[in-house]
Length: 145
Image (cartoon, rainbow, N blue to C red; front, side, top):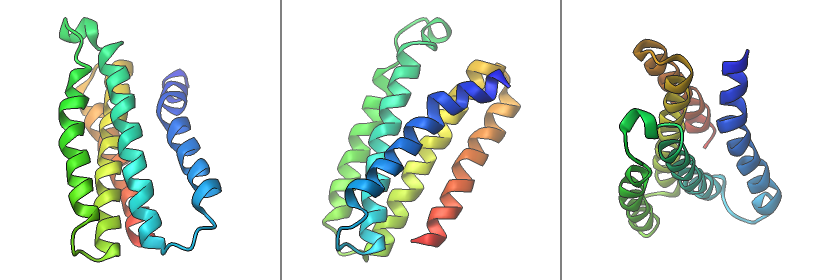
């Protein structure tokens, strides 16, 4: 139960607050569902890289023997560039939203893997829960948008 509570408080709650805040702030805008999907995907990526930086700069320091918080920054920079170009590309709004949602749920899955590794220190559950945390929300949002 403690392991689930760690995951719930460290990962699920920030993403749930992001989605709730997004719905409150942008729910009534006259944007298409796909445009809103792109926006929430982008926002979730930023949140995910921030959470990863906190994990890699804190609990993972003894594992890496160094502060690895620079890793999400190195990966996040190109992601921001990708979103910038994707937003201005000629792709349809639905394609843009799907790419953003796939990217954001991939980062959510990676963060779930980090939390699972801290709790279990075993490869198998880390991979399994990382994939579950990526595929379940990805499938849900992919078919909604």
